[in-house]
Image 1 (cartoon, one colour):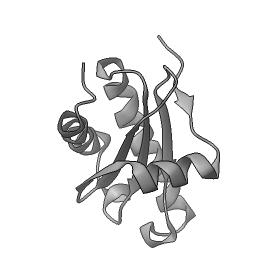
Image 2: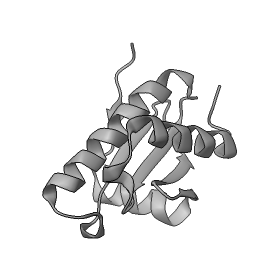
Image 3: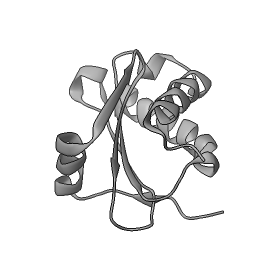
Image 4: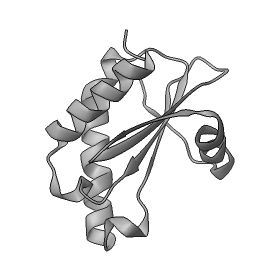
Length: 111
């Protein structure tokens, strides 16, 4: 299995927010931007609106699990940022996975 490359730099997140396309569902927002290198880089953010630290952590875990399932079906060469929403900590990873796959289908990132 390939290594999942995380995005860590604030400038990378800002670039994806500014230039990327966004896809919205009740449990997840996905930003997608084609990058220059061959890697598929991913970042996950959870704002204070999601809830306390426990809810934000659960949101990140749910998104990470859904992404882990979707990863083998994705094209390389994209930067992807997931933003948790207010509903995210209360749903299962399968629901987030369905929303994620719809976003990827709309963005043309699926193989």
